[in-house]
Amino acid sequence: MPGCRKMVEFLPQPFPEDVEYPILAAVDVGSVSVGVYLLDGLTGERLAARSMLNPQVQYGMDVIQRCSYALENGAEILSGCIRSAVNVLLREASRECGRSQEDIVQIVMVGNSYMQHLFLEISAEPLVSAPHKWMEKEALCFRASDYGLMVYPWSQLCWLPGIGGFVGADTVGCLLASDMDQRDDMTMLVDIGVNVEIVLGNRQCGLTACFTAVGAAFEGVKIVCGMRGGPGAIDRVYLEEGEIKFHVMGGGDPIGICGSGLLDAVACLLKLGEIDQSGRLRETYYFTRRVFLTQQDIREVQLVKGAVAAGIRLLCMEKNIQPEEIRELLLAGTFGYYLNPESAGMVGMFPWELQGRITAVGNAAGEGAQIAAANVREYGRCSRIANNTQFFDLTQEPQFGEIYISELGFSV
Image (tube, rainbow, N blue to C red):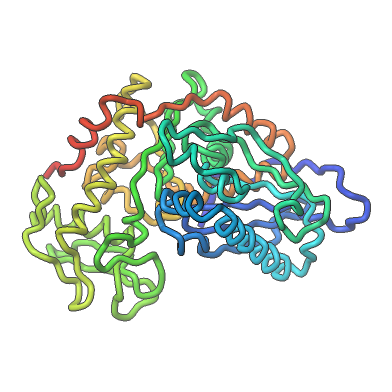
């Protein structure tokens, strides 16, 4: 999966004299998956990359459920399982490149505010209770061994700063990797996960960020035949001579449908008139006898697309910018990489005016973490980005409910 820019100039740092071949690590703690990247501390070369499903999903795909679990049962279980996952990935990545895990002398981490609280075992109560305040917005540095990471004993563990609310260090990583703060053209960044973070602006007018919760429908949750992307998943749906066709990851018969295929399918059914403006599905649509779309599935897509569209609309209003003034929309994250922009426009998730201006930038958060690990100046720039980005709290915006409801329908 491509990143959104090449690695910046590597700046060597002073490392412990007893470590002959120092390693830098960048860690992206996502709500659904966790990624680890190892860099050579002497050259900045990427040595290895590993990822895995975030083990916290067993306590809830929705991060609010995880925080509620932590409040009821203590945060130790959730903190312990994510730290163990990071340890496993660091060990596997070290073995992959034939190096020692004990030579990792610095770790830079990114993740949303939920993930940061649960990793550091900070109380999640401020996040799940109004007014939803995030306790740690500044860049944080600790000794990695104090958090159970099996690396060089005096290795430093650094979390990038956040912006506000649930717009956390992962968004700052995306902004660093995409150079949004240095662009002259009006640019929008959208990172779609269980929450959606949206940033709009340029160098002249500054950046403004907001978030909206969308749930995990695109991860297969609450979708009758839904599943995460993987072998057997319908990942692409398209029309060919007026008939619906589909592609299955890995080939063979499908066993479910993942987020990108779900969005494509709704777009195709809209084009065929099988779904009306209100979202009513004429009848259950069968890809095969075992894999099908129901009215419930369409409603779940409407909830997601309505939240994203409302967030974009309100953010444009806040910045006094018309959608057609946006020169480029950067689509971050794994789902964003596989999403078909035309399908997103067809269902009304993104303004139709942005067709042809959408660029998938892959895991920009993870790339931002690598850039910050490899370059001291870029690491310091993260704090400036965070401090200079305005946070727009949609939960306090009186028009959100009305606009959200207005965005639930389809324009067919």
